[in-house]
Length: 405
Image 1 (cartoon, one colour):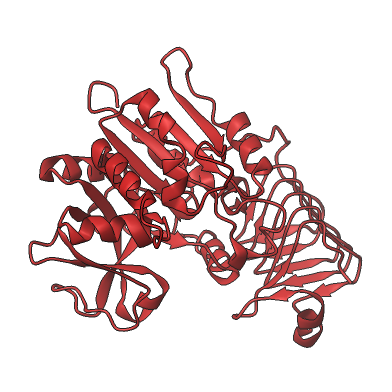
Image 2: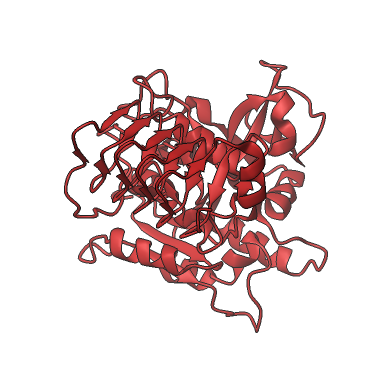
């Protein structure tokens, strides 16, 4: 941050994303397309860059080629000012082994910290959809003299078993305990029906992070995970504090999308997050020009609607050609909907083609899927279950280039 404390951004982007299969069969989870033109990693990178955290390392590991290419070709910063966003692959710097966990990933990449010698380190996850100004979290961290500050979002207590849960002390900021996916956690003092879920975003004083990583590495019983190992260790020492995401305000936000955050780790949450985008007054508004989400520009022509082609409550990206009917859907660049085809409540990735008279409902189709003329997806549930991946809530998913039968 120019004229202020030095902050290094470390983005943890090595996740395999098994629960998001088949979308992660050929790519890392942070490289999955979202919202038509974006990749999931674009959201965290945009938040950091908009907050003037302009030196960012993206730690990768699992099927990282697509992610590496996207970061390298899209996120080009000013080398004149020494700024950069760079992918950092697993390099086996501490011996012939890959990353054992997210904490081990940073431990094996401490050369990045030693090179930059920052005052603070922002360790953020790479696969959430949200807007956040990290400067406000950093200011609380500095003001309170914290060793680590973790961002927490209020979620219903009934949903606690899906998250790491932060229990604040009586002062409201110090973390008293950290519970991994508890079934019956205590509610918040001012909201008994809610808990603080960890967002996977941490701010560390540099010395604290380096020392704690080295101590964790010596523990053979550790999972070497940021949320499961490092945060509990610092919590036991009374050094961890929580930042309430509800107090974070981003320029250009609306009352409707203030505090929006989604973990899109499953097909159902991924699909639901897309449905949040498409209403006239969306739950999450992509069109915030005061806090933009940046991504690669495809250079494709504007979308084209031919005779009879219509789209309602939908996002239609450049290069699309619409001859059929599209409702409540998100279309990535280069999608073609032929005459008589019907697409409803679906998410179509790059270069998907829906043939003449075909029907696609409640589906997520990865790039290069070709739906033949007259074919149906989302019409016959029993047939879909036999042929394709179907989520718990009935979302049908086809992988990259998968054959439609």
